[in-house]
Length: 237
Image 1 (cartoon, rainbow, N blue to C red):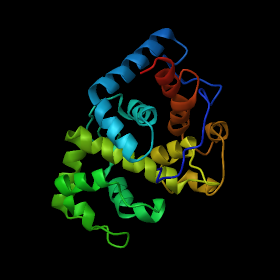
Image 2 (image 1 turned 135 degrees about the vertical axis):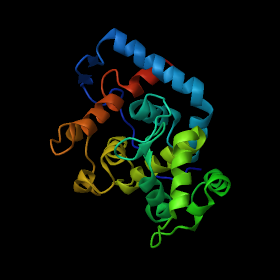
Image 3 (image 1 turned 90 degrees about the vertical axis):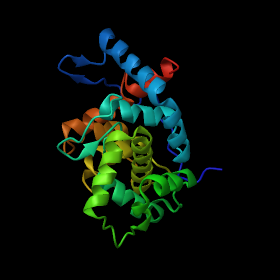
Image 4 (image 1 turned 30 degrees about the horizontal axis):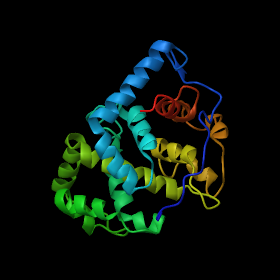
């Protein structure tokens, strides 16, 4: 039985546009082939872990795989200028926020497998609360090291963060992938706050000039023509 709020159904493609940024054009066959190859590599390298955490947070394997594709291209990359790390480009701050406020936002306890992971890898995270999110400098360093070096841990935190933002931005009894994309990429309390409690289409978000180009590109990479979700389904990845 489902614990979390259902993700609203969407079409593939949901947007009648394709991603274009210089030579990175989703209409070009070479780019399409490269993206399919990337998705298959992510599935080969991390498919078991993706399924585990996609199931735990009721996201669906295609969705979590797609976020990894956009965020890191399937590479365990180091910390960037925004402090994001690893396959899912998770930040230390987002982990603290999502763990400490998970039940408040979702109405559910953290999944059992996730709690077991924290007990084994980062027990200090089980001590934080919404009113006391303090983590020692030593534990912060340990957490960042895990996010950079441990694929299982990073994907678990990516699943956590995505479910958290979906629930935070839900409306009319459903969560919406397009709103989750905005919150995941642009922050939980930024532009997405303008749509609190409201349905907003992927197209309207894509056309919202108050969102960064990077964020609007994210929407079309996931939900547009020849986007990662459409390629995943069409190619039976």
